[in-house]
Amino acid sequence: MDILSALLGQVGFFLLIFARISGIFTSAPVFGSRNIPVYIKAGLSLILSFTLLPLVSSTDIIIPESLFPYVLLVVGEFLVGLIFGYVSSFIMYAVQMGGHIMDLQIGYGIINVFDPQQGQQIPLLGNFQYILALLVLLLTNGHHVLISALFSSFRVIPVTGAVFQPELAQFMVDLFVGTFSVAFKISVPILAALVLTDSALGILARTMPQMNIFVVGVPGKIAVGTFALFISLPFYVGFLGVGFNVMYQDIYRLLYLFQQTGN
Image (tube, rainbow, N blue to C red; front, side, top):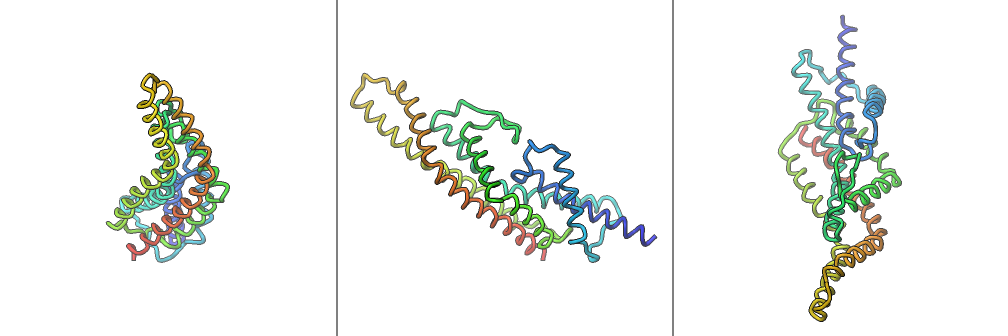
């Protein structure tokens, strides 16, 4: 009977690990992409759970015998993983938001493309910058850092050891504010070029009233905005490197925030 109880305890502990990893693989960049089939995500989550089980197993953790308290623990672990994934995705949301701002100002706002990763229509430049950001993330081994942070999460936040407190809400609010700030910084070079273009068109409209500024201005802004975009691409890639470093810091800040609130 003791052997059966121990075996059931290990199965329950394994499912808690699997719940946290599943939450991360639901929302994290690259791993949470809809292009990856669900059975591949589930299989990878099972493999990582089996790998982590002997590393994080502890006799101090008591698995509830009744269903309802255990379901609450599973939901809690899934929410920890889900928050982990969303924090690591905020930089990608900022990239898409910056692309949307540029689309509206350049004139690509009426053009939308379907993104199978998000399952919805997104702006043209937003999709371009999002794909470029994913490539930079993979080339800089960002997915390895995410997996390393995943393993560290079980060391910093033991299974069933996370406590949700008000400090977490303030942390998420700060991330939302930072997302808008990063999106604006991404779009600043193109916005500056378009402001100069609008100023030049305004001067032309005053000096040559017979010129149809609308006919000249729309393709002119598209040409200037697209040229400014490609000129600023090297700076954009460098900015992504800085943004990913901040993302990694935010992930570990989140983990230690859980640890501090838990302790």
